[in-house]
Amino acid sequence: MRKVLRGIGFFLGFCGMSISPLKAAEEQYVLWGDARNGSRLFAEKGCGSCHAIRGVGPNLGPDLGKIAQRLTMTQLAGTMWNHAPVMRKLAKGKGIDWKPFGGSEMRDLISYLYSIGLLDQPGEPKRGGRLFVERGCATCHSIDGGGSKIGPDLKQWKQYGSPILWAELMWSHALKMDEKMREFGVRWPRFEGNEMLDLISFIQKELGNSGSR
Image (tube, rainbow, N blue to C red; front, top):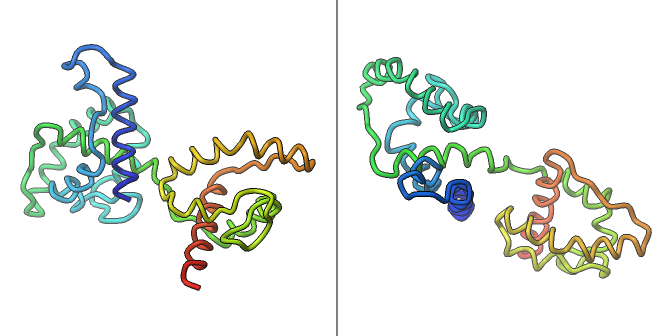
């Protein structure tokens, strides 16, 4: 989780730098935060006393795991400004101190809130197991030695926990895979919604089980 948050923070910062490579002062506008530090600030600043994250937590205030996904950064700033008087009153009623933000803290918090939308919900390994067969993965791949030998054994992917690394591996593997599938007359598999997440969850579960045998 920490590696993913750190990677997302770097990615968002990199995107910001490519969008506004002007003066250092102007770069302060872009999202240049540390998502991992932002998750810590969310607790330390008392945000979690009133706000939920994706349905987890109190509902005294709006769910910050959802609202950040619907607003641009500027719109979020306007929403926070409009919400301030009510939030101050509620915080006072609950005995919570009003804690200002300094330095890069607000950037870190916002980076964290926006990064939440990039993190996956838990996958369903059972559904992933069906997809592994239905999408033709089992035709070419084995998992820790159990299965076909046409393609590489997926055991080597056990070390890659980040979805960003999975995307890199699958993209790099696509050319050879396309050639093989054409050779065998197999249609290119497509994944919709959370199907890829379910498939990866199945593979990781199988690799975990194989390690305990």
